[in-house]
Each structure stands twice: as C-alpha cells, then as structure tokens.
Length: 114
Length: 108
Image (cartoon, rainbow over all chains, first blue to last red; front, side):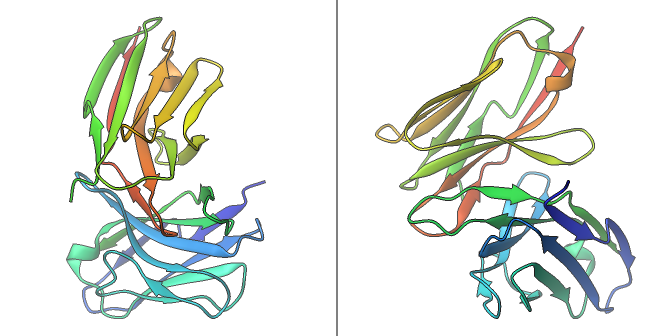
C-alpha cells in the first residue's frame, strides 16, 4: 500500500492560473517536503514542514506557497503559475529524528504550464 | 551549487558486469541516501546510510564521512537496474541536498 500519494499525477495549467498540488502520507511522519525535479538540477527543495500548521522555506521557495493543515496532508500552491514552473514535483515524508531520518517519496506530479 | 557531485553523469553497462557510482560532498554530511528513479519516474529508496557500509542483494553502498564521499556498487548488472541513480546528503539540518543523478543504461 503506497504510503505517500500525490494528486493530481498530471496537470496542465495556463499562465497566471492557480495550481494546487496535494500530498497525503500514512507514515505518521512529522516532516513533509516538496521538491521539484528538473534536468541538470536533481531534486531541489521548495518548502517543507515539521508538522501540522508548520511551513518552512526551502532552497527555491519563490513563486510557491505551502499549507500543512494536518499531519497527513501537505499542499503546494502556485498562486500565479508561470511556464518556468513546468516541472515534475515530488512530495516526501520523513520521521523527525535527531539527527538522522529517512525520506519516503510519492510518485510525482508532472506539471505543465502553458 | 555543487554541494553534492555525482559521477559519472551517465553510464552504459552490459548485463552481468559490475560498476560503481560515486558522490562527493562539499558540505558536512551526516547521512546519505541513495535512490533509483525508474524509467516511469518513480523514486525508490535503495539505501539510507550513516558512516559505514550496507549491502542489499547485488547492491552495496559505502559512506565515508571523513573523506566526504559515498559509493554505490552494482554487481552483475541486470536490465531492470536501468534508470537514474541519485544520492542525497543530509547536512546538520533537516534538509537534504540531492546530486544531479547518474543515468544508467544496462543493455543485453
């Protein structure tokens, strides 16, 4: 049973439109993460969260907002989508450890902004 | 930046051969993860390492924190090993920095 799920799996949006990517995890992990993957860059961290109600900026947060309404759910919001945000987005969850933890990834969402 | 450098960037192997992938870290790294992204795009955990060595079937990984590198050895490569391998370094924060990946193609 998949422990980290993402929806939608594919999305086409128009420039200037609002896009919400959703992530759900059943691992009961405190930490959740949003990454984007682009050729030549590997995975880059956009936002992350330490638990319900918490959102933190990652390495490339500009143009994105995040929302963590519950332990299980973490959303990535593009208020005004731009073509440069065309990418594959991965959500992950991780157990909060000191100092070590492991991340588990969702299947990814392919977003195309036209 | 190049905080996590993976090499080689691409690799072709014949079935049954062995090879090694490498990650060099320019940040203080406490743990390393190795992932395989299959041709369908899914990311799979391979190893999660503190300094030391782990082995799983035909795969073996070592993390040397003193010399700031990690290796992933593939023994007796199979067609299903094809995909992109990523290493990811955890520094002294809760963030993880990914390398840019090694694209592996195994052919008959």
